[in-house]
Amino acid sequence: MNVILAICMKDIRLLLRDRVGFFFTFVFPLLIAVFFGSIFAGGGGGPSSIAVAIIDQDQTAGSRAFIKDLTDGGDLRVTPMPDVLAAERSVQGGEQAAYIVVPKGFGPARDAPFSGTPMTLQVVVDPSRKAAAPMLEGILTKYGFMQLQSAFSDPGKARTMAKESLEKIRNTPGMDPLRKMAFDRFFGNLDAMLATIPDQAAGGAAETDASAGKPSAAAPRAAFTPIKIESTTIVKKSRDMPPSAYAITFPQGVIWGVMGCALSFAIGLIIERSRGTMTRLRIAPIPAWALLAGKGLACFIVTVGVAIVLIAIAMAFFGVRPSDPLRLAMAIICTALCFVGIMNLLAALSPSERAASGLGWGVLLVLAMIGGAMVPVEFLPTWMAPLSSISPIRWALLAIEAGVWRELPMPKYLLSCGILLGVGAFGMLVGIRAFGMTESRM
Image 1 (cartoon, rainbow, N blue to C red):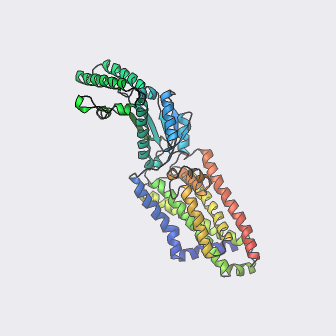
Image 2: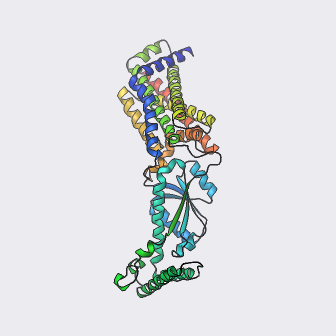
């Protein structure tokens, strides 16, 4: 045990003396967290494809047609859900960026766009996906207008809607008589137009001769809203939404610090092996597992230290208050153990410093990209998003966020920690075996 501790302390001292390594281990993750937190604090652009859940409470032909168009359109990755509770759990668990409720009355409003009652959608967004909210609303508005276009594509159906809308307006108490007269004239002209062109789309019929005194479609379109979107963030059962964007970006900063630690110690192990230091230590004699254990302990201590420092800075200067310190502590420990295993695996499989740097950053950057530490998961292309599940960074982020702000169900939290520990154990075992085989050939 004294040998392991001696190796551990030696590696920590070497890391602290390396200015470049110290910068990328401690300072760079802080810059990442603050920089992206500042960007997303004020919102931002939306993704090209968003994973959403949808609940059809209307259960009419109109609501089903809308959901089918939304699903087939390709702008969203739509997952039907049986009820709001299931959808809320999927958003809280990170599987979906938002959920959409199609409430009762959507179908009748779709079939009578001029009745004064717009199609209404309720959108509940994950507070960590604020950047996706404006894009989501724009997409839903687009498909809302598509429903209006679909309704007018059949002149016979359009005439029926026009007559029903006119009847409702005539029977509306308290409406200004002048407005009633204007609507009466408009719907009368619209009905006459549709009757003369039964084989054409209503889009063409709506363009009339302005000189004849007939109104164009642009006039009523500006006078009504075909779709209304009620957007809110998800309601937490026991926690508030993140106090700021920094509660979201600092866990990402922790991940960058963890990756820096793993790569630094992997390269350090390669340097000692290439310079003969490992051979001299083996003559002592010290078994390969003890050498890797000492390196692993040093990597674990530094990794946990980086995470603690970053979280402390987030709390002291950026208003971040961990909602569950126990979960956060467990997540940091599991994440550190996971990357200790990855560090040993990278060191054992890399024949040189250059190979370790290329292999390490190549693998870690890909894992970061698909795991959410580099690009939010909802920003990924449709075909790439499912790959996030194979990245340990994805599970590390979920576990850490569960301690900082996310309402993650306990089974999902335990699954995240279990995957991290499993990846760490696998990397450690494979690393010890490969390292032993490598040393035996030296």
